[in-house]
Length: 112
Image 1 (cartoon, one colour):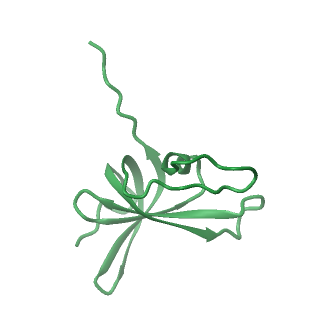
Image 2: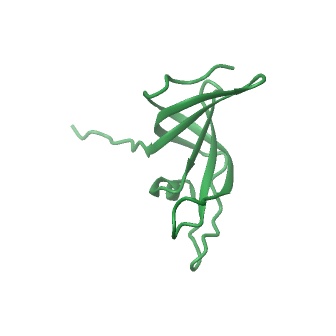
């Protein structure tokens, strides 16, 4: 298994959401949580995104209820995404690419 992309550069492609975890956020007042998303690229590379940005709404299959966000995430669904590679992380034989600034790429069809 290899890393995907070069640190500091953009990558884009199809990524399948395989895991979601809520992680504590002690840095931003008013926000109580961050989400950690693990994706697998088409080539099998692992990608991890930690965010609380608006892009999170694209990964939800069910709307939030009240003040607390109780949502079901689209595990197993493939998304067209663009990221900036933050760094590569290796622990033993496990390799993953840490990314930031996720953006959903809309497939826009040109009208002739």
